Length: 330
Image (cartoon, rainbow, N blue to C red; front, side, top):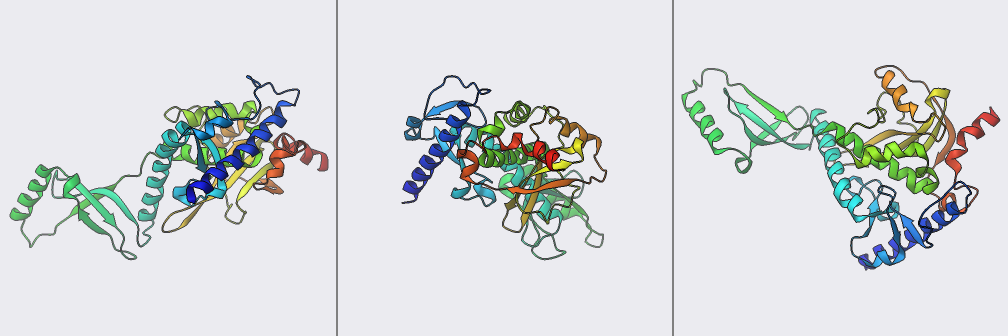
C-alpha cells in the first residue's frame, strides 16, 4: 500500500510540474529545447524526463523537502532524478546531521550522542562515543572496534605505571563535520523549497544559475558563503518564503524552514537571490555585513506551497513581480 501511495504521489507531482513547464513554454521569452510535451526537468541537473521515466526504477525519485531525515514528509516532496537525489543529496544531508549533532553536544543537551576521540596521558588517542546523559555531565565510552589496538595498549601501560595519588587528566574531541558542505546542504534545501513553491518560473531565471552550480559543485566556492543568516531574529517569522523588500540593496528571498532532530527543532533562514538585475549581489553584501547588525523589512506575503502558483499562468512568474509590486504601492 505504501508503495502504491508513493507511486500515486510521484504521478501527481509529475502532472503538476509538467503543466507548470507547459505554461512557461507558452511565454515568448522562454525557449526550452527539445520542445517535448508531457515532460519535467530535474530542478538541479536540468535533464528532461518523459512520463515513461516514472516506470524506470530510481530514474525519477521522490525527494522530501526538507529531507525525511529532518522531518520531511511525502506530502512535502518534489521529483528529482535519482542521481541528484541519492548522490549529492545524501552526502550533504549527512554533513548537516553531523553539524546538528555536534551542536547538540556542545550545547549540553541531555541525550546528545556524537562520535569522537579521547586521550589519557601523552600521545594516546582512540575512538569513543561521547554522550550527555544529563545536564552538566559528559560520558566517554571507548570504542575498541574503531580504535588502533596499539593505542589501547599504550593506555594500559600508562595506567599501570601511573601513580594513583597524582591527578589524571585527559582530553576529548569530536567531529564538527564539514561546515562548508553542511551549509551547501542548507542552500540545497532552500533552493528546492523555492522550486516546490514557485516552480520553473523561478529556477529558470539566470540569477539562480550560480546557486545551482554551487549546489552541484559543493567542493568549489562559486558564490560567497553567506547565504545562511544567523545574526537575524527570524524565530518569530512563520516558515515559508518571504521577499525582503528593504533596504533596496538587501532585496532577496528568505526561505525559512525547520529541521527536526531527535532532540530539538532547528529553524534555518537561507537567502536566495531576487530576480532583479543585480540580485546576485546580495551575497557580496552579506559578506561585507558579516558580524554587523542587519535591519530589514519583509513583504507581508509568506509564500507557502499552493498548486495555483504553479498552474495559474498569472502566478507562474510571481517572483519576477514581487519587488515591482512593492515599488508601486510604496
